Image (cartoon, rainbow, N blue to C red; front, top):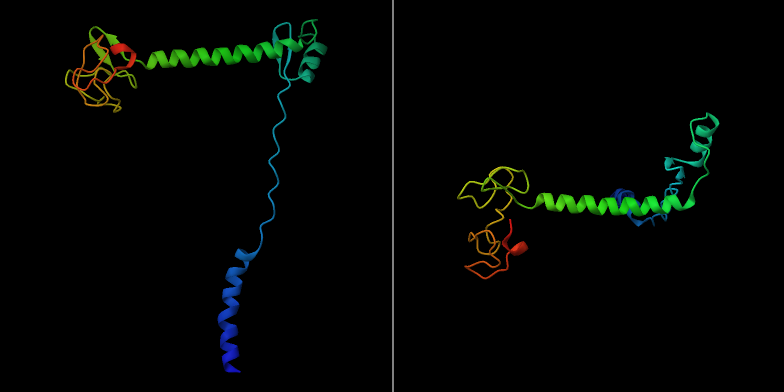
Length: 157
């Protein structure tokens, strides 16, 4: 009888601790997707919703035009084109810039010293140093003279 009591005392806490692990989890509800934006473009003005346009029209602040369904598609295309152009300008801005014969860091704009291989401020590698062997190269070089690695952009900084 005492042995049965000891076994019960030992098994009950273990069952209490392990019971949450043995339960099957309830299936998670799928996330609810956000509703698609319903933009209302009238005479080139983008109202957030058709309701907003109706309110503005009732108050006399909106034009007499009607919503243009083609404008939303054109706006999305222009937005995509604009984002691509912004990314291109940012990439070009990150390229090394030369100012009065000094190379500027593409990360922070600090000028490199003559012997620097990395930027002292942000750690960005020098654009005129070979990525493989660390050898310096001249502007316009297309290949590293030490290891033969093709240089990015034909050696242009």
